[in-house]
Image (tube, rainbow, N blue to C red):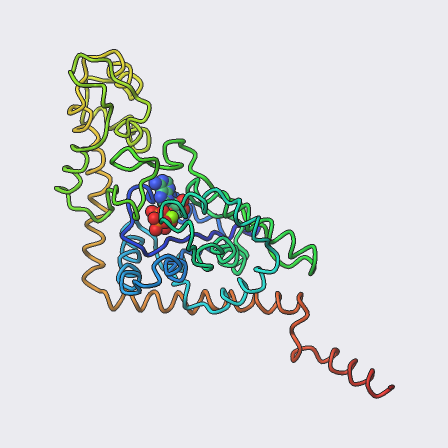
Length: 364
Ligand code: ATP
Ligand code: MG
């Protein structure tokens, strides 16, 4: 059977990518790529979306486009298999967003829980830029312009995919079957849905400065892990510890595999036993942190090294992105032809329309 999946995801170039992105989306993108069971795969850098809340800081967005591209390549995304592109270079996405705006009400946008939280986080309550407020619509355009079926993303993206699905249904209902309904592909491991920050805050986020970045040096990773938030009531080693809200254990849930115990902590057979000891009391934070640091170093070292290699050929990375933009634009432009036809705004490529109008006026 022909492969059906069209996979699409992206990231905002508001900073380098962190281990939250990695477990929430990047890791599964690379797995999907390597499994190869897809028709097309697109990964894009959402610079236009990043500008919606960074409009006075274009240099930040510009600098981070290359950082994110390097992070992609470092994680193992392969431009030979995946189209990597930059959102702003595909004008068809603006056009599609403009049409979609008419399919969504203001109150529907106001109900989006992720946007609500982000508005609060950015202190936008009384002065939300219209573009930021409507970014779920533009995200629907990003997805549908490539007829994406599958969007690997973290949990915060669920409301966006729901919004995109509603738009597709409404569009197809009014204009006829044209667009494809997307599905989110969430990480199967609960700890990866929304990795907390090193400060214990609900989400590791570039905008909150509580991140372990993929490109951090080994020293930085070590320092960040050793100063991570744990359980404030776990003062003495002998005190019983709590797992809830203790992000060291959440990170272990996200990263730890059986073989890590053999390598770095052979006193314990598995994570359950480690957790049980911590909860009972008698296991110090430092020991757990050192274990986590070893695991993260092992996972991040090859990524860091690959990144260094790509950093040696920055013009090559831009050339790769340019080629990706051209490929992506060709696809989006084909979909937009269908959209315009469905919406009856394809005046000049419809000879039958011109002939019929000519006849109508001739017979007046
Ligand atoms: P910003 O603060 O600028 O919004 P961000 O850190 O939230 O940045 P995005 O570029 O908005 O990152 O998100 C890109 C992808 O990474 C999305 O699929 C999102 O769900 C996922 N993601 C981001 N942060 C996390 C996290 N802490 N845990 C799991 N997934 C995450
Ligand atoms: Mg975000």
